[in-house]
Picture 1 (cartoon, rainbow, N blue to C red):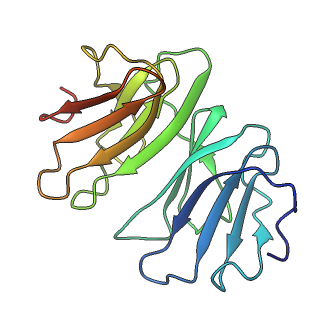
Picture 2: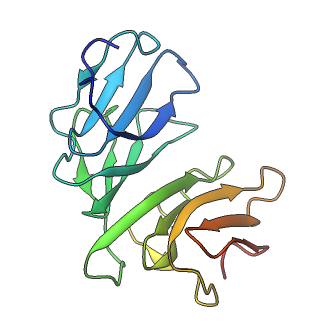
Length: 174
């Protein structure tokens, strides 16, 4: 894969559903890369945060120019121009060091985003990342590494934890 460092530790991948040859790769230590030819060549997105590991990424299913990046220490970043520029969107997180391991967007309501936290459970944004609210008050696991949304019932979430199993909520984490 030309342009991607041979020792790149890739932590997340997302594909643009409207143009499937566009792929984004989040790495540990090298930042975010973009391919527009199905991963034959890669270009580093110079404005993407690179001082934190890029643990989780999500792409808006309705507007694929909108990307979210969950980092290992810097919280969530949002791009509205296909990764050319990024801004932090961390209002509402309670943790001092915001480590986001996974992000999921509701495919029917793309303004609803879930963030799985390392040490903080699950947060939800109902407004495209502008503000985050902790939704997992009764969730005993804190190291959330993956979230899945039931495509037939968007409020049914599954959360996988680092060492405490899989959790399910029927009400979006409320």
